[in-house]
Image (tube, rainbow, N blue to C red; front, side, top):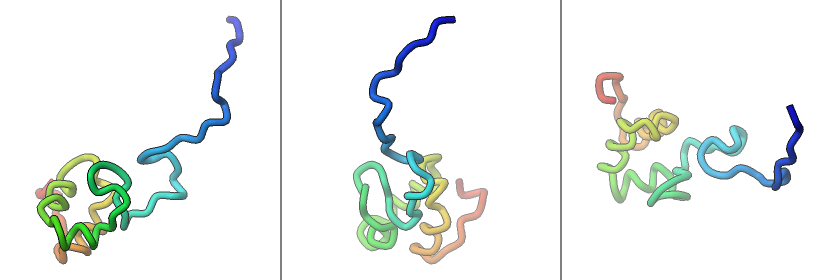
Amino acid sequence: MAEFHVEGGNRVPVGPGASESSFNPKVIDFGHYAGRSIAEIADVDPDYLHWLARHPSGIRYRAEISRALGFVLRSSEY
């Protein structure tokens, strides 16, 4: 086996899951509402949060969505 050089070794990953220490479950970090808080979205588009709670990309936001919408998500809902 020969060694090979990887270009761009000083790059920093971005996007969901890029850094566990920077994740904030109260702020959406992707899509149309990136950078907006779940509480803010609950005021303007609660249907989006209902959808997100059922979608795989929303798993890490489910607890905060429940708090913002004022209900408890049951496993049968997603």
